Length: 484
Image: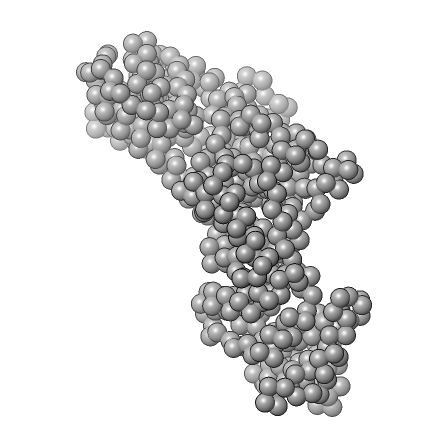
């Protein structure tokens, strides 16, 4: 059966990274579909039977299958049912010359995403192709969105804030680098906002319409992260050469596929094991990935932004990180400054966190006085901006700045003899500033703890939980004031 029109309209390849499998026992139809689809997708495979199509799926990743119902051997519908039972998730367009309403219903129940009667026009099969690939693209976007929500990340609201010289330099560097497609390495201490910087690069780049896909390389085992990044080939118990104990196993796309056309952010890239370092280097050089257990290499169009809180040069010298991968990642390196290097931005950061976190928490904003900001600027902030954000979040829950947490941090600094040793004492214990307001941290802490105790009717267990300290510490504080 040949199509009604054979003239192929001029078209450009709209889906250059997509792969389509055509399964039809008529050579003429296979040839026509191959030519029609080849001008629109990156790869077209073909088979004359379900059994031959099954063999191709063991070696190749496909985004869409065009499947005839009437095939020699196993029928298209029966094969489709088996595919869906084994977890095959690609779009499937069924075609047939002999169909009635019952056949159409059975096809949809089997898991077909579209159904076309022969003879069909070029526009019909092209429309079915575009609908299927659009659905596949939407599924990838939904996956990325669900993954971001499951990580409880709200990067859109936490922009890089600050007008200090350090932050202006960072923002200028991000704007310059965003316009090119080069790999970027973000370095800096934990909590300095490397993921926010990566997201800014993505949003400022020509890839802004694509997905931003983050993955933390330190949180997954070597086996898990390999599948997470590169995906897994679809296989089942009937694979020609199964491994011992091999069972039915649905394939899955990796994050490189989900980030197609966008940005893949590899956080803590220094934690990658040596074998995966070699694999990542090859991907960066060849722009192709191979799913775990698969034979076909899949082309990828992804910008890599990597981040580390380690000095990768030291890791290379120690033999823990590949030198060639380090230089490949370090095409452009941007260092994010620690908060202690731009403490003049603390006021703006606090105001930003109060404004963005209060609505999320469903609480009223808090006011932070100049005196309190003065004490915030005395602290060393080893956890950087993330630590400040967490302090503001706890303070919003409590209804006032959580001075006790800051006081404990300063006490630890003083004990350690750090760069801000003696900051609490140097502030002038018992001195007065700002119209007689107490300015020493001990007094501020006492007032804060007393306010929390009053709010919970002197329930010391609950107060200790809210304050983030142990009940024993709270009781010791109260006893020192002679109030317990």
